[in-house]
Image 1 (cartoon, helix red, strand yellow):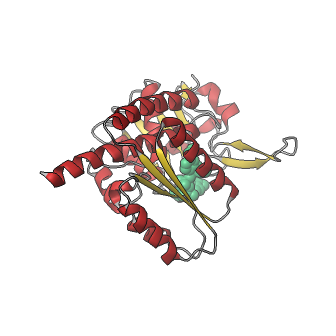
Image 2: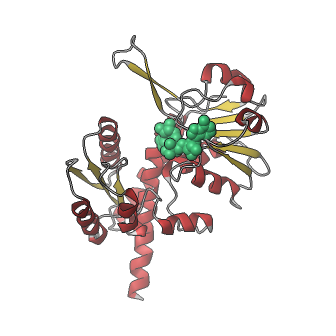
Length: 296
Ligand code: NAD
């Protein structure tokens, strides 16, 4: 089975549209601010599509585009302004930031209630503690949604997550091991020994490595489920753009062995934006409870 991320993302976005309408009818328009520093072309594309999706769902959105020469203090000042802006419920500072900036300092400056990327230490802790008010990083949340929609049983399953980043691997593992999912999780990384052998034990493999087509057919237990998070550009002179996108999994040889697999593109990728919109709605909804708690 091919897991269709475009379709699942579209369904999530339709639910977001309906929920946004309900909130707007109650007088609360969900608002997302996206901050881009520098002129990385891929980041500009991501930011553009986030803002477009906001408009499409009826969200309020603010786009701040700053030159690569922006000083860290200036960016912190903008973050503080957005933290204080009641029309903004979610703030996303697009990664990567220019090398002279300390990304962690920026993340820590965000109001955790508006941290729709789920990178602030408070949200990381809430995720580990299984607190339902946690804002969960969008890509792993999207992978969970794909597994759920494809009807893949997680309880007791052996899952190997390849990669231990704070953006994908670690939060992914936390979601899978949570009481809501009950999987048995192995986190593999660049120092793991005999990765093919580790992967052959897996009922489910989540590949989040950033190495084109690293996961090969002889790593796969027949019937396994494979979620490919990787987005890698490889040279393709025959294409107009000069490159094509491949995942971390050698799709052509791995797919015939799997019971379900995500393609690249069209798998995990479209889920990330959809979950960002879902997180913005969650932050907006939670802001309602916070303001009523302050009043009482
Ligand atoms: P990262 O570079 O921060 O982390 C990669 C991880 O892979 C590291 O933890 C490292 O230990 C591990 N690793 C590296 N080489 C390895 C090896 N040879 N064997 C085993 N493990 C190894 O990357 P990231 O931000 O987690 O992203 C991973 C991939 O997912 C990238 O291709 C990225 O483009 C993609 N990505 C996609 C989305 C999406 O929306 N679909 C979102 C985020 C990241």
